[in-house]
Image (cartoon, rainbow, N blue to C red; front, side, top):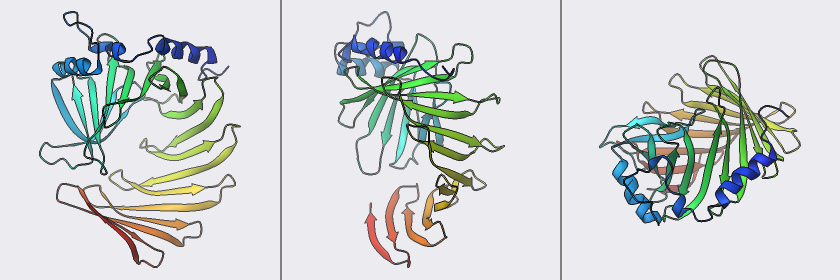
Length: 301
């Protein structure tokens, strides 16, 4: 078995750990509990305890969980100049993200994610995702390599402890390492799909290969970036290496998409989308143009 593969019995073991707890409410503790406080009996009680542990917050354009299990914000916004589409990261006294709120353009209420750690550790062991109405959507659990500290696997479960899928990660020997493979597996350990990633000297991803459950190449994407690191082009190729489509992004000085053009493999325009923003970056209007450049749909916010 490849060192990056997870034994099906390990998946069953993880599923069993959650299923044994059945209800998620008593499980909401992890690295955020203290000896002085009683264990919460409901989500509401847990949230009240959680709020007491938050000491600061920051606003970001987006965020991610890195290869070492840390929640990382991307492009911080200064207070008072935060557009509607953003994330709020809430930190404890150890500078760990305990809660994340994600605001999207279509909704006024955010979705939420709660993160759990082992004692004073800084690696996420579990996260619980809530929908914008406060109901548990799903649960994620994480495993790490004991030697390197890199994330080996993350798995998604429903609130009853039934596993949906697991993603097994592979890395190269660079310092710091690049994530070069993600293999999606079902609860029996069968491969569902696989992605391979390639990078340039600046550590920007320049190619993503996609494989099906038979490990056959579906196609691959190539990426280029502008001098500020914004995505400039995304090209899609079929398994034979033929260019099928290209998305070209034009950004302004604030790194906001102003225009995205879709062309076919021969360079013919298939469609255009344009964006307008207010002074702090809120999207105020979207326009869709046909291949002749005529607007056929407009949405204002």
